[in-house]
Length: 111
Image (cartoon, rainbow, N blue to C red):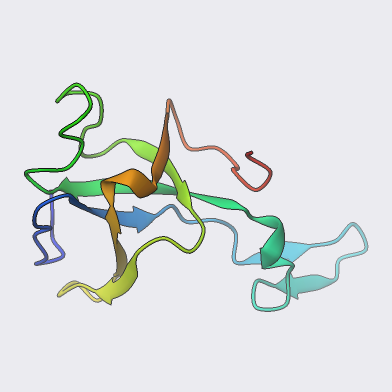
C-alpha cells in the first residue's frame, strides 16, 4: 500500500530504498557509522517498488515488474522526496531499474 501520498506519472517509478545497517561493528567492537563508511563501494542499490507509473515498463511485458518487489537500481538514480508519512522515497525512471531480485540482498558489489 502506498502511504507516501505520491503518485508517479508516466514512466516514473516510486521506490523506497531497502534498509541496510546504518552502523557497522568491527571484530574489535568499534562502531563505524554509515556516514563514515565507504559508500562508493556500493555501485548499485536495492530498493522496493512502492508504485509504478502507468507508462513505466511499457516496452517490457506488462507484468515483468510489480509493486512490492525488490529491484536493483543505479546508485545516483532519481530524485529524493519525502512522503506524507515522513519517509524518504525516490522517484526514478523505469530505465534506472537494472534487475528484479527474488529477495532483498546485498547489492554492494553487484555489477
